Amino acid sequence: MSTSIQEDRPYHRGDLRASLLAAALDQLEEGGAADLSLRAVARACGVSAMAPYRHFKDKDALLDAVAGHGFAELARVLEQADASAEAAEALAAQGAAYVAFACRHPALFRLMFTAPCRPKDTGREGSPAYAILQRRAASLASEAMPAEDLTLAAWSLVHGLAALILDRRIPLAPAESDALARRITLGFARLTRP
Amino acid sequence: MSTSIQEDRPYHRGDLRASLLAAALDQLEEGGAADLSLRAVARACGVSAMAPYRHFKDKDALLDAVAGHGFAELARVLEQADASAEAAEALAAQGAAYVAFACRHPALFRLMFTAPCRPKDTGREGSPAYAILQRRAASLASEAMPAEDLTLAAWSLVHGLAALILDRRIPLAPAESDALARRITLGFARLTRP
DNA sequence: GCGGTGTGCGTACAGTGTCAACATCGATCC
DNA sequence: GGATCGATGTTGACACTGTACGCACACCGC
Image (cartoon, rainbow over all chains, first blue to last red; front, side):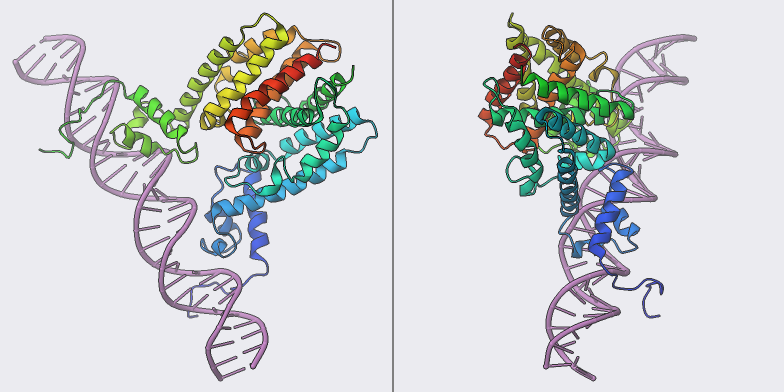
C-alpha cells in the first residue's frame, strides 16, 4: 500500500509496445490522426502518460511505426490482388485493391503518406508495394509511355483517386468507389494497348 | 495608463480578418499545417489570442478560409495554363501547372485537400478548377474511356503525382518535378488517341 | 542476498484551443 | 455637445496536449 498503483494492474505488462501500437491503430480508425493523442493511447493501455516513451522516442515515432504496419498490410493486399494472368486485368485488380484499402482504413492511409518522418521502404525505392506494381506495369509499356513513367502514372492514378475519394472531393457511396476504381484503372490499362 | 495595452498599437486595426488570413498563409508556408497555431497567428498580427474568434468561429474556420483562397489561386493557375489550342498539349500544361502549384505551396496544397470541413466549390461539383479540366478532358474521350471517367482519371493522375512528390515518395530535385509532371500528363493524353 | 538494468510512475512545465466576462472604440440618435 | 449601442479586442481561466526529469518497481545473473 505504499504506492497509488491499483492492485489489479501489474506494474510490468507483457508487451506494452504491441499494445500501444494496437491502441493507436484503434484510435486512428475512429477519430482520425489529428485527434490521436499519445496520452489517450496510454490511457487505453491502462498506463501512465510517460510509459510510451520507453518504447518510442516520440509521438512521431509511434505514428511512424503505425504507418509502417500500414505499408506492410498494403503490400500484402496488393500482392494478393495481383492474381490474374492477364496484365491489364491484374493491374486493374491492384488499383481497385489500393483504393479499397484506403477506403477501409482512411485515417491510416492518410497517416501513411503524411507521416512526419519517412521510413526507407515506403516510396519508389525499396518498397515491396512499388515492386509489385512495377512488375505489372512494365509489361504494358509502349513508345508513348516507357516502363518507368507508366509505373509512376499508374501509382499516381490510384493514389490520387484514393486521396480524392477519402477527402470527399469525389463524393461517392462506399459501394461505388470499388467499381469506379476498377473501371478507371482498367480503362487506363486498356489505353496502353491500342 | 489604466491598461496594459502598448501605446503604439491601436485598439481597432483596419482589417484584422485579412491580416489573419495572410499571417496564417505565412505560417503555413514555413512550418506546415501541423505547426500552425491560432495563437501564433494572432501574435503575428499583434493581437490577443481571442481576437481571431471575432472573425472566425474556429481554428478550423480560419483554415477553411485559407484553403478557399488556395482553391481560387489554383483555378487561376489552371486557367492560365490552359492556353494551347491542341487538346493534349493543353491538358499536359494543366497537369504540369497543377503539380507546380503543389510544389510551390506544399503546405497549402495539403491543407486544401485535408481541410476539416469542405466548402462546396472545391470538388467535382461546382469547382471552377474541375470545370476547366473537364472542358479539355472531354475532348479526348473515347470508347475505352468515356468523358467523365477520363476527367476523373486525369485529375487523379495529377493529384496523385503531386501528393506523392510532396510526401517524397517520389524523391526528386525540385527542377525535375516539372518535367516529370509534363511528361506523364502528356503521355497520358497521347494514350487517349491512338 | 545483491546490485544492475529495463520498465513504468508522478510531477512539472510550456504551449494549445476555447469559454466567459470585461474594455474600448466609432457611429448614431437626442 | 453628450448618451447609447454594437462591433471589435482584452484578460483570465480551464482542460488538454507533448515531453523533460527523477524516482519506484521487478526481474536478471551472481
